[in-house]
Image (tube, rainbow, N blue to C red):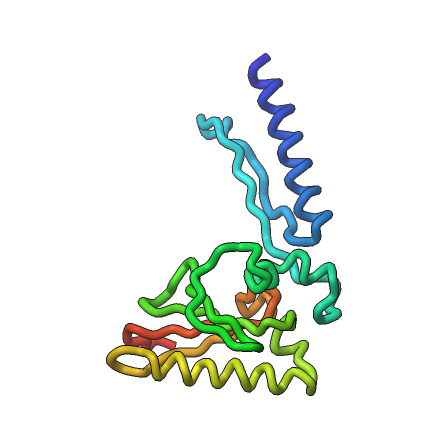
Length: 173
């Protein structure tokens, strides 16, 4: 009887996990299984982030669900490094170097491939912010700037942003 209840519960969790993520358009279910067959008692669910279906820049649906838009609107707490009228710089929550900042435009732009002519001043402000950050580094002012565009390139938040990394030698590329 315990196995049956557990199986039913696992099935319900799988169903709702799949539907919550896919209805929201945020992710798709990759794998869901329980570990009973391996002697465990946990349910493992893996999801893959999805590319936003609506590519209209700044649409209400995109900006309402965008984590960076929520950060810019001060709905989520972050450590702000620098800001100006067009750009916000925050510390990355999963740093890949001793200095790892995210340079984010305040305007919602999905990525480099969705830039328009009117966005050139914003990207210019982002690059000037890079220069300002580099000048503020102690020791070597060397840095690496990374932009991912699209899920196959590693973009996981579909709001344009630069990764600014420094503080260690990064000779591997």
